[in-house]
Image (tube, rainbow, N blue to C red):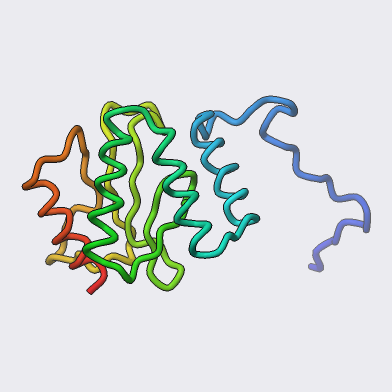
Amino acid sequence: MAEKKPAKGTQKSAKSTTAIGKASKGFTDEERAAMRERAQELKAGAGKAGEESAVLAKIAVMQAPDRTMGERLHAIIKASAPELSPKLWYGMPAYAKDGKVVCFFQDARKFKTRYATLGFSDKAALDEGHMWPTAFALKELTAADEARIGALVKKAVS
């Protein structure tokens, strides 16, 4: 027995499952702001000197103690891996190799967390067996912490 095909133009369109005019509950205001910052960063496309200036300006407006940690991290990363280029990434200071972000610094106020974060992307060569850390919580930096960060950054770009 042959199946009956519906006549052209009689298919109903799928109804939207979201209400019109309601904001998505999927992203926080801070996350949406970070996405807007990233879009602006991509449009700006500043040169290497301009990108480092933008990173330093972003660090300068951070509140203490994150500003101090951001300044120290910038110096440690530049000294440990001079091949990394500073750039803004979702409104955060980040450091890239061949245009790909290797590590970044997220201040505590960025997403209203209780600590700042030093994070590494999947481009960082930090693999150790089947499991390894990719982000570190920071409340302050000691000399031992700075040495460990320097070693991690060197390993990340190796």
